[in-house]
Image (cartoon, rainbow, N blue to C red; front, side):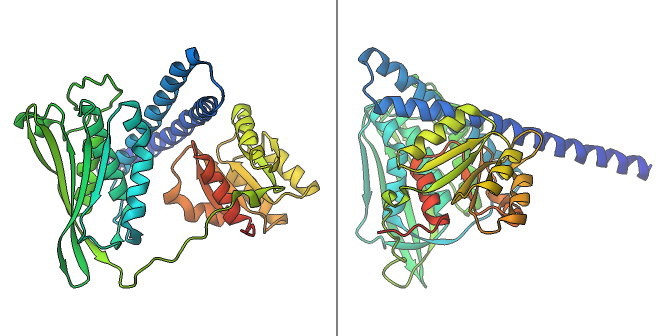
Length: 384
């Protein structure tokens, strides 16, 4: 009987592993073409686009952004369900965190003609110790929802300090909209996954945002409070206990001078020709010399003949994976920076990638400046 149970358990575990591997590959395959759609639409929007094409490009860009958010939200919930998310403490600047949130949400607010108002009370310190990434994710999701259901009326974020004790601070966050409001019965429903109210904005939505907020706050020993009245708007509130930093500033970051990348030589390894061309164009903007190959074996052969200062390596390629190729490259070239390029969130597997010889990680789709910054840092380019 025990043997039968053991076999059944083993089959279940193997099936789960296969499903995880399938989801990983599927995620990569979805993000890869999405990277192309996002990059090309953004590039065309910056060019001298004809007026009759402008609205179509904006729609294309919004759809690409929505699909990416849906993939990211689904993966985040998967990690929450598997208890893979931990509370990560680091020092952060509250002004920088809010600037990050504003830049992320700005396009949505402008497209929906919704004014944003961010305010920090005078009693709020500047530097904290806590999980800045989770706080950022929570605020983006809450403000995103407020814009969607706010009927183009102003959306505000107010942060205040409720208490300071023994090097800690209780911070209060309030996101307020002036939309249609939420009934008492619906306030419980919208916390569940795939549940959302009807919106006049006719925007895309999955109903995952608020569920993610609830789960992330739970990890941070907090909870979401909803104060809402029909036709009078809603306020979403939460409190966090955060550590305070003693000194008055975090180590200053050097200002980035991307012009220092001019003349750098980079090898792109990607089996997707569209992604090759996009990366080549992005590098060309900074006058970076680049070549592209479509397999790990081609990259190995070329690196033995020519000198490059960095390699951008796709992880998922047929015949030879990026990890296998990098391990071989390290056998004859131990110093060249190799940047892992993937549509799969590999942050949790970074130690494994680092052991294989990778220097840095760049997820698809990426912001152009993220690539430039990684090249600056990994190639140790002198910054003027």
